[in-house]
Every structure is written in C-alpha cells, then in structure tokens.
Image (cartoon, rainbow, N blue to C red; front, side, top):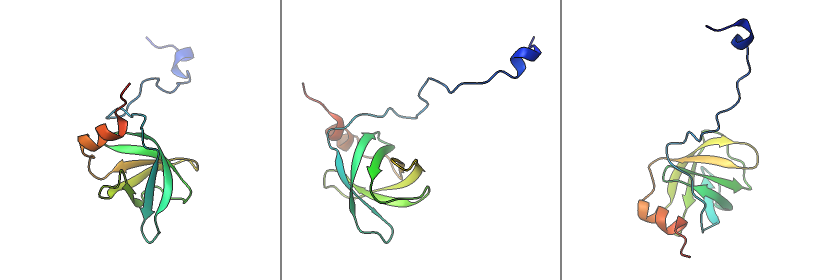
Length: 110
C-alpha cells in the first residue's frame, strides 16, 4: 500500500539504455552532410548504429529536417534529424544501413 510519502517521490532517469539497437564507436570520423538547399559540409561522426547516428556539424539542422550523409564514399544515406542539442545532432536513417557497411565502419582488428 502506497503512503503519502512515496506518492510524491521524485523519479530519476533510467540507467538502462532504451535504444532499439546498440550504438558503436566508429573508425571513420569525418563524413559529408547535406541538407535541403544546403551545400555539403564536413561533419564528425561520434557513434553509429544500423538505425541512426550522432554527429557534430557546423551547420545547424532543425529537428525533423531531412539530411543526407556520405559514409565511405558510398551512395548518400538519407536521415531525419531526431534531436539537436546545439552541439550534436541525433539522426535516424530512413532505412537501416547495410550491415556490411556497418561492419566496415565499426570493425576493429587488434
């Protein structure tokens, strides 16, 4: 039975990552990003999953903007900006990227 003391207790954020796929550190750090009516600019990738990525970009993109990334010189990958905290962008790919491309960007041989 709940008491009045526990009814208004503050809740802290969950410590468990709730993403659909794990994010991985990457070997490639630079990519080209272009937006609608914007010329391509260089951006720094920080982490990557088959469904999205986090990157730092000099050009501001609003939440919901459609952007295109060039990873390893392949065809552009279309994505939508999911969040922007002023320093980093979180992007969700419109379609999951190819697993072979994912492996080539994240595989570390020791």
